[in-house]
Length: 227
Image (cartoon, rainbow, N blue to C red; front, side, top):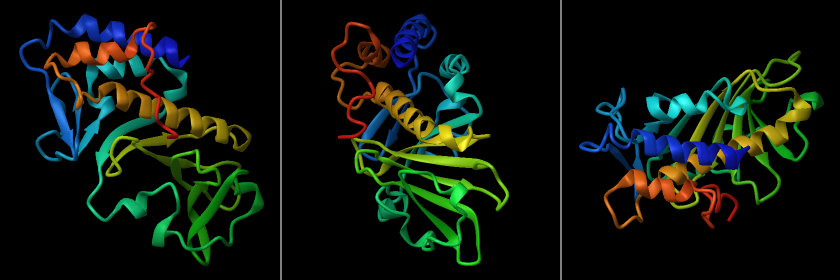
């Protein structure tokens, strides 16, 4: 599915190149430069994030991917010193309590912490595998069958102060969540890598991104997620 999507995205970039040939918007997030291709709402008020779904040319393609139903994706620059708070290696000081969390809300393969000693409505899930470079914050009630809402924070492999954030509304059932979270992390980080034009020598950003997306390319956009 990913390959099909990335190939489709590459063709889409080619088709819009003429529309934005004179002004190709890019966004600088810490040490990385990301291609936007067009102006978007909120760019002047917050220079530290790139709202993927506000890019009309890209959002139309994302709507065709069932995995991304009920999601909103941002690429965001963190403030210096905040890396530990958002780190996939632990919940930081905001979620210090492993209890009280009912067993049916403990996702296998993840350490689950709560924000409160007397309640668990806000949960933080950290993968036990160091190969999974993401963490998830979710909400749940005691009688919930699955999480109500989640925010997945995936580490961007090329800059520790850049995160790919995905808001997930109506997550699937608990038995599907592990695979679901992994797919979301891989796909969204792959999209960010596709849009990263920092290391391109040419100014034609669309051509640079297309090189990531061709079927013949040896390097896939999602490479490096778990490195």
